[in-house]
Amino acid sequence: ETGVTQTPRHLVMGMTNKKSLKCEQHLGHNAMYWYKQSAKKPLELMFVYNFKEQTENNSVPSRFSPECPNSSHLFLHLHTLQPEDSALYLCASSQGFGQGDSPLHFGNGTRLTVT
Amino acid sequence: AQTVTQSQPEMSVQEAETVTLSCTYDTSENNYYLFWYKQPPSRQMILVIRQEAYKQQNATENRFSVNFQKAAKSFSLKISDSQLGDTAMYFCAFNSGYALNFGKGTSLLVTP
Image (cartoon, rainbow over all chains, first blue to last red):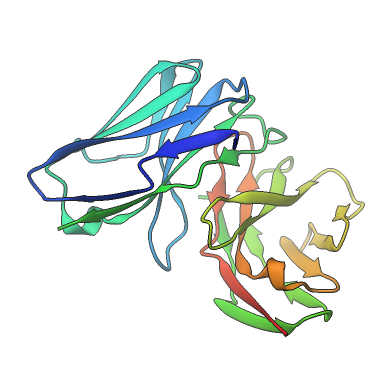
């Protein structure tokens, strides 16, 4: 079992759908992250939660809504997405936030396609 | 702004040979951390190696080593005795006490 688990692995949704991505970490970490990975672009940090509190929202459109009910679970709620939102969405966790010596542990990602 | 640049979109190397992936970064910070992550076709990003900026000694992890040139803001990754399983995207990343900033990645293909 990997330390960070993401579901679903693949998701196809229409522009009017509502769906959620789920992430769970089994590492006892305190910080969790959502990253967006698009082709030929650097990974884009979307949201950061530290001890369940959102510490960062990198100007992400409101059609993406994160939720962190506890330090082990992180959700990304999606609604009225655009085709350009199609990407690989990666969840990660780390022992601490803002600590450069605390490496990120990633899940396998959710490949999202918006039609 | 802190940026990470990987100037080689794609590289290939023959099995058992050595390859070096380049990375440069831009920062005004003095204390920070640098990382190389590997992303195989399974898509999971895996930490390969990390370097603390205040340490002059280059980090080494088995077949992976870095050449860290702080003044030049350069952080290259050397893979020795390349194996087929090293085929992956490699991302250089930078952290100065905030979340990681990543480069665009280098796609490495190891051929038999």
